[in-house]
Amino acid sequence: MAGSQRVYKQRIKSTQSLKKMFRAQELIAASRIGRARARSAEAGPYAQAITQAVSAVATHSTTRHPLTSERTDTNRVAVLVVASDRGMAGAYSASIIRETERLVERLTHEGKEVALYAAGRRAVTYYTFRHRELAQSWTGGSDAPTADVARDIADTLLEAFLAPADEGGVGELHIVYTQFVNMVTQRPRVVRMLPLEVVEGVAPAGQHDVLPLYDFEPSSEAVLDALLPRYVRSRIYSCLLQAAASELAARQRAMHTATDNAEDLVRMYTRLANQARQADITQEISEIVSGADALAAS
Amino acid sequence: MAQLNVDLVAADRKIWSGTARAVSAPAADGEIGILADHSPVLSVLEAGTVRITGVSGEKIAVKVTGGFLSVDSNQVMLVVDDAEVLDASAVSGH
Figure 1: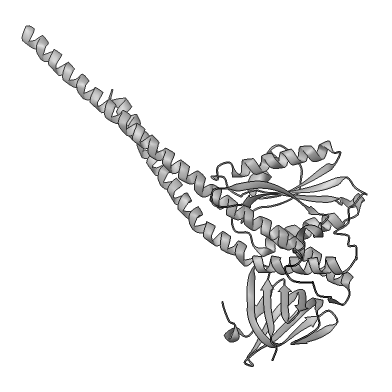
Figure 2: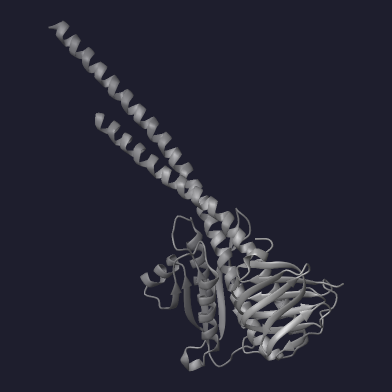
């Protein structure tokens, strides 16, 4: 029975080396979360300033802007999925994809045609494996998105929203991302980004007395033209940052569980190996004793 | 004397923040200069250089690539896409 002892030893060894990898991933994720959250906080002042300005313009001018008006000429809608580049994050990508599928189903049910945009390799491989068409995809750096990537994504989507209907223009933009609530809770969320509902972002009145009467340079239309795309960019950037923090938190938790499980397995295999060794010894003794008995009897 | 509270923020970080005597920025219709008690204004910024004169006379120049500017009761908010501080020695904070 020496065979089973050897098998257990091998399993213990491989589980131990897996455990080291899990532990390393956990530590990496843990050290990056802080940075991801700091980055999210650093983007805060910009988002705040832009929201304030947008609400100022919205309350002082009645200018209609293409980005704030509903489009009725097309039934195409864009859906942006923000998933991770790598696995090892538990159900992170799976739950975001499930949420997306639910949204796509609902939109299709409403008679809309969905154009999918995916960020993160996990989402891209999910859809390409199923031969589903992606309008565009972005991969790489899902756990540390830069403002440049956010700008690229936002510009692509804005272009699609402003394009004429016969050139693949879309009437709405939905974003599916994971909201970072705290270290233990991250929630998949769907937001409708375009057409913009500026009312939603208006700072509560009374907090700043009365909003001043602004002069617009060169004109309120031009200011809106400059503001709204930046507002969208900043919103998308903050979605990406939240998703990155969520991804890392999910990864840390998943890897922590994996490390614990590996420890359990090692303990179990050690016990089994000990049992097997004991059984081997018992058997050997009984063989020797019965051999000696046989010799003495003859 | 009234001072300006200036915040200069880029998409991913805060560039400069502090009190200043004057701010000049490349607005859409040409350079705009802001002193204390300026009337509220919301303006588009072009690519160019933002110059801030601090309360003690120090000068800060920041190259920006476009954005917007809002002035409201001596609160100046410069929101830019990307910025590069030209005179690093005068930067406060980080």
